[in-house]
Length: 293
Length: 142
View 1 (cartoon, rainbow over the protein chains, first blue to last red):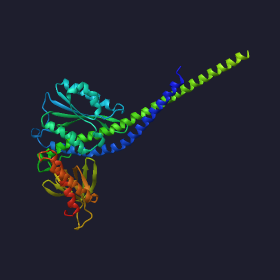
View 2: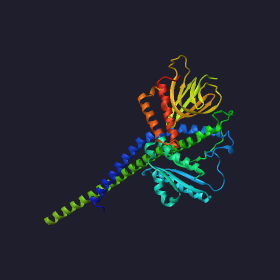
View 3: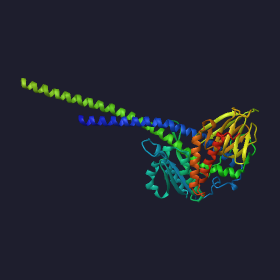
């Protein structure tokens, strides 16, 4: 039989856990609202700039395209994966979903004969993967989600990507992050950012080639690096909002579990206490009976 | 065809403007230009400067709204103008003290780094932006 002191301690500790997880849930809910606004506000710019590039790319021949847009050659390539996770844990399967998918992608790309490199935005995936993939890792950018500043992200992450690409250190770049869908769901998203993917135009009204000022090449050359910075930043805001949503859900579950556990424990505690009292009573009655006799 | 053209000004932080207007002028890299409904499709780079919306009727027309933008891109379609810019501030929101401080900071940073640095363009952009703000405050610009 579990003894009373042990049960009491256990109840106290579960109660503490419940209070902590409840506080974390509240904090995440407050942060979620702000970062959700940021994520939604970044979307239009990112969509427009991609549409603009798409429109121009459809007009110029693939052979004359700048390297950031040119289709990659066949065969073995150097591929950089930029992996977005949280800086901290306690957010359910948020980080592990990204890590699992990245592992699968690395295995697949390596099997196809490509050379894979990794850059991390956010600390968690790096912590988990550094032992296994240590020699593939190029950069780790942590703490960016605290400020969520476009300028900072551009200077730290995007500028590095662009110089490395210009120096020929990789041929292709993909990003993976959790996109924010709603407070309850996140969607794992892979996107190729270098070279910029060109989708066929889907609008049915055929419009003539627009005028370019100064000319197509100059406009594209200005748009493409900008696009990288925007996509990198958008992934960061999305991932950040998704992280807070995931943490809120995870903490909500934890609060509920702690509540259930507390209920069970207090039932056991009360039963045990009652049993002890009954035994004591029996002993007293038995003692006084034997004295009478 | 409507005489109005839909203007959208989008920054990485938000969609700043999304409304119909009759005239948009913007600072293209090759000079200021105006756009009205039915304009030929066009894609242009912008430099830091002043963007206006609304058709001026008199010399001191309040109907015209002025914004200072920090360069970017514009896509013109017959019924729609989309301006992508890093930063846009309405004239009413400009604060002289703040702008002068910013200009000073940006100029100092620009002097402090070698001209080969990749950061140079960024700070030059900030200087141009602050100068454009000042010119709006001094009403030098139409």
